[in-house]
Image 1 (cartoon, rainbow, N blue to C red):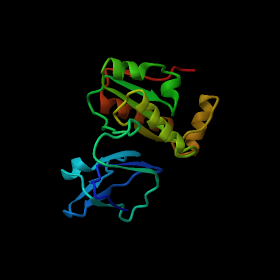
Image 2: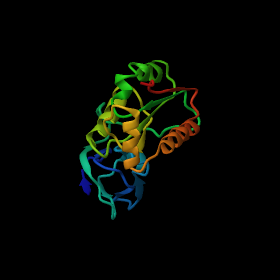
Image 3: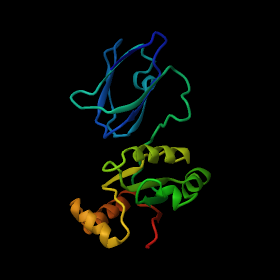
Length: 211
């Protein structure tokens, strides 16, 4: 992908439709190439002025041999960008005030009410959201809804997206049967949840009630 604008290119904002692989952005004037996308953010903001020290007039975005599914792409001139543009920050290991486990997308808002905006925005605490599923197996659009919802309530650290499949169950026995079919065990789930606790070392952890 090559873009030109005589007035200077300030930033790019990608909304990817699938897992993101690293890609390069090259400034034609200097020949300098910078690797982007290495953190796998599905909504990826690229500040070109920060990367190159100036607003380049001509750039190329190269995905190499990787296939890139781009749902939306916005190109901005230097200056402020719209509020809907998500400038995600990395999760912060070993320093989390509150860790919220959400089984799947929308639970973080439906079942935990105002926890996120209150503690992350009003209290200014370090809040990390962890989803057990990423919804790629049945409704990929929900992944974008998850990111949009978190951004809307003030979360700025990118969530952890688990690798467990999403399916509707009415009992725990039914759920574990599905997990077995997808080659996941109960121990796999417990190990993964424990891994997040050890990674973030939260002062408080919030999760679903038993039902």
